[in-house]
Amino acid sequence: MIMEKNASSEGYFILLGFSNWPYLEVVLFVVILIFYLMTLVGNLFIIILSYLDSHLHTPMYFFLSNLSFLDLCYTTSSIPQLLVNLWGPEKTISYVGCMIQLYFVLALGTTECVLLGVMSYDRYVAVCRPLHYSVLMHPCFCHRLAVASWVSGLTASALHSSFTFSVPLCGHQQVDHFFCEVPALLRLSCVDIRANELILMVMSSIFVIIPLILILSSYGAIAWAVLRMQSTTGLQKVFGTCGAHVMVVSLFFIPVMCIYLQPPSGKSQEQGKFIALFYTVVTPSLNPLIYTLRNKDIRGAVKKLMGWD
Image (tube, rainbow, N blue to C red; front, top):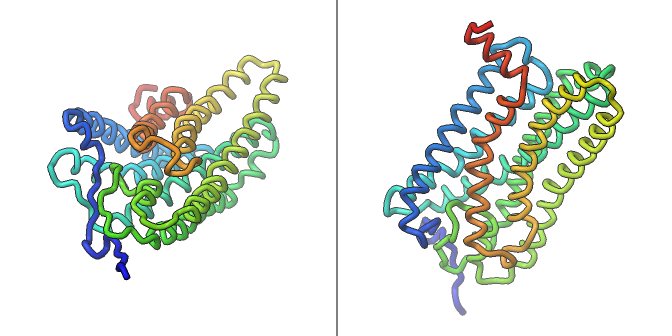
């Protein structure tokens, strides 16, 4: 009888990353480092600004601060490891480190999907139910929505991570990705993984499709309300606050759906790496720019903080 064994017997995985393009690794290191620093500075700036300016103590900026904190944690769960692997010849990660990374990447990504749905509901109430906004989006209710987003992500990730690492890998240690991701790990299995692929599809549908339906429904109602508006000022305000959120949703959901809403065997692994690079590196760095450049309240708070008013 052949004894099956996991990478845990060796104690580490090898993250192949972009080793097929060694000439690109230095360029990728510089570009990713720049984007990572932009993510850290931009999201910290939004969190601090939202805390310091009393005019930004509203549900919208409370959720935006949560999103910024999420993006900080999300990028930090994978990018430092990627930078280390790109810089040096060592491309290993411990088995325990891989488990921890997978858990937090899944937890934070799932939480972000739910939180973006919550933010769309906030915008729906602000535009379509303005007279009831302060009642419907009471601070206590907003805190509960934020907690629910985090708890759902952390819980779903605990379940899915345990399912993923219960699959026997039969000694395979080379992960053809730049971080520990579910589809890449499932490819290492030497047993039938159709049940795991089904679980991945079901959980992805729950935490990606349902929030996306909520987002599309909210913005459909907002678009209908906007079309009935007579005030040009009102239209500009709606587009100013909602346009940024639509851009953020598009930048996050489209690449995530490309990765998680099809079986691991159904897509090019090399293409998957660059798609994952987009939603783990580029999107979190662009979010602060999108919200800052398109938002009058943020710009006003910056001028006030700098003493330019």
